[in-house]
Length: 126
Image (cartoon, rainbow, N blue to C red; front, side, top):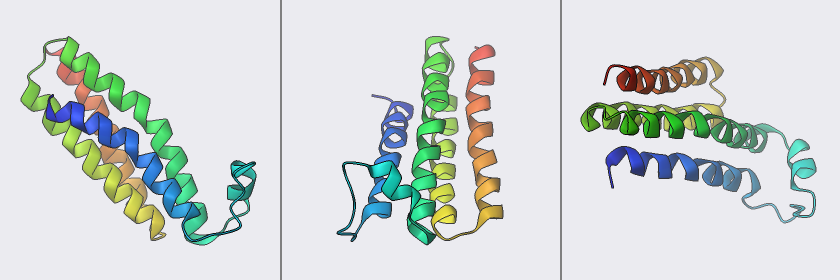
């Protein structure tokens, strides 16, 4: 399995990590209506939920880009670099989101987004 394929797995697990942060230590969590409970949270729990949602939004675009680049026969090393940049950006995105640093969060979000665009460019040039 390639490094970029491992990155797809990591990206798929990121929502689980962030929602765990949102729910951690709360005995009043309502699993019957989790979204309603999460909508009532504030502070780091709310930001963790928002990061959770954004990880789900980012995942399909990233996974598709990796697979398209691989299918196009692009250089695996280039695919791996762009994938690692994406994961690094998403990890920083999460840290900045949880620590309420919106400007830094937006900047690393853009880096992650551009790394996905780069994957499609890599595929197009293959």
